[in-house]
Image (cartoon, rainbow, N blue to C red; front, side, top):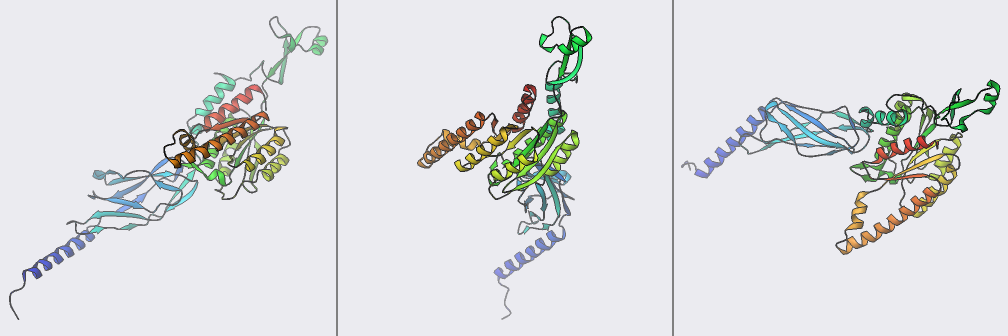
Length: 403
């Protein structure tokens, strides 16, 4: 049986040899690679992991074991000549997130195999509240220009806080004359007034279940915290004392009002500790605790939301008690998707969704009107407009001296 070797055996032997050479040569020629990334990213921001290799890898694809707080945000951006590959991601939740594994995939030299090595970068990325409006100086310029004009001054002649006495001259408001001092000096003397400073402002953040709803790419609670930090900075620039309060089923964090930029740094640190709670917020307990901790009249800026009428009624009832002593701004964040559902029903399912959305919108408007009748300033904001509207409300209340 020592006849000629069948041709099929030769073919299979050649293929096996080629496969073996392809596999072992590709394995031996595997490129060196490492993964790096930013230490810190703002929530809602897009960042990049950097994959560096010692040479170009044709047909490279990358997969990442993303943690809960990070999401993929597009295609691999490659610069093969430099051996540099950028892997985009979105930061969607605050916290420190570890990227534990990155898989690379590319075809072998002859294309008979796919090489899939696993990298373990053990990379920790911190996702923190967004303070870009503070860093850019946008808030500082807005507050200083609104409160002090081009040059900083004490807003003399306006406000309710006594500044100094001065001689009365024609053209001045006769209501500014201090008659007792005028009698003592035997000449007309007027009071100069300036806007009062050192008000107490407390930022109150509801971190209950409803605030975990994702709008505009990340949860409502993070929209609220970003705006809370912005108004804390505005308050520091405006000369007021700023505090912080967060709650869900029970009170969690309370920081009493403090002056200056140190208060902002403290609030930034505390806000990063606010958790994504899965329980309902207990407004009755939380607002009773806040009332006990704030005996002095303050400006309270609430970031909260509601869905059902029972929660809304409890919220209105408790805010009505606080409104007797404090000035209150209530900030809610509405979902633009609900408005689009309300506008364009096409199918029966769309009609049903539209009816529900219309009922929810009507209930929401009713609650907002109830709050407004209590003298509470209500801001129902779309994502992306929260910070600007809260800063404008703060400046308006200071100008009207409602605090």
